[in-house]
Length: 350
Image (cartoon, rainbow, N blue to C red; front, side, top):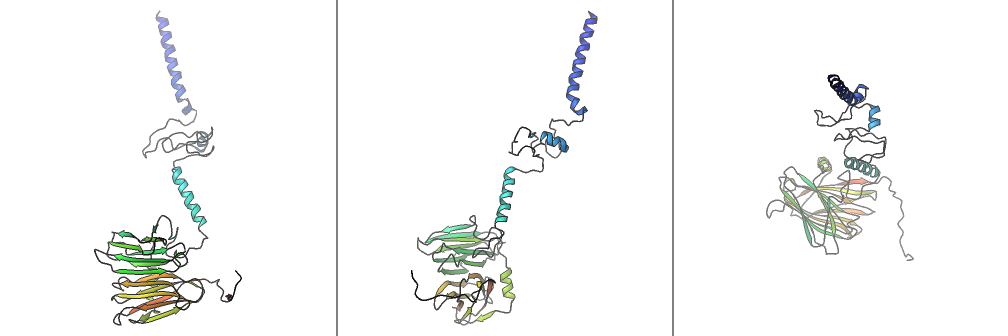
């Protein structure tokens, strides 16, 4: 009886010993344990897989789950044989990065549209930054931060005339900048200007004074608006003083695609009328400008001048006691433009 009980105890001890050895056998044979462990950096799972074991088990995701790739696709829809490690990001972020790279490659060789000169990357007329302003409606853009020193205002249409009022509001009943803008074709010659906004908060107001049939697209942004072109023009000695009541004209060659204009005073109010002519008394674009302080808030704009016979005319509508300084220079010149193009006239067979 005692011998039988001793034999039974020995058998139970052997069984427990063999069962324990079965669990520790993979470690004894040099294989990594598949039981996830928690380490100090907040990641679950063993991060010291060898390349061979990664290919066998498929690695671990950010939650420590094994990615078994030998039976098809894993949870992230990766093909068999691709290893998931801790350096791989979320699939949504990976897709967004691929789309961004594709957009960068696609737009690398595309020429900018008119009015797209100031900003880079996606350009000025990005759908996320534009707003449609219907006829006889008002839209405002408010900037409460004092760090916003200037904003870019761009207006265009789908080929119809553009007639709008652009104002800068600073405080109640205070309008230090006011512009009346008219463009014959808002698609070929979009309005593009920079408004200085020192000492915020400031509000930009765009009112479409055209009829309901003439909507416009507006873009007001404070991002990537450098002072570079404006500062470079003001430092050049090519300015011309225009006395009150006087006017100056600037003709341009057909190769000039766009013109940059800078108007400023010595601190006095600025009242001017800026016109783009193409032919006798044929106004393609007209800007009536008022600035409370022409030194603190100068006027800078880029005017598109496609075709030939373009003339920029600037009229100082203020009295003689309020002179102003004007800089009018080419902004973009088409080097491939030919000066020997023939313009055909006469009767045509329609």
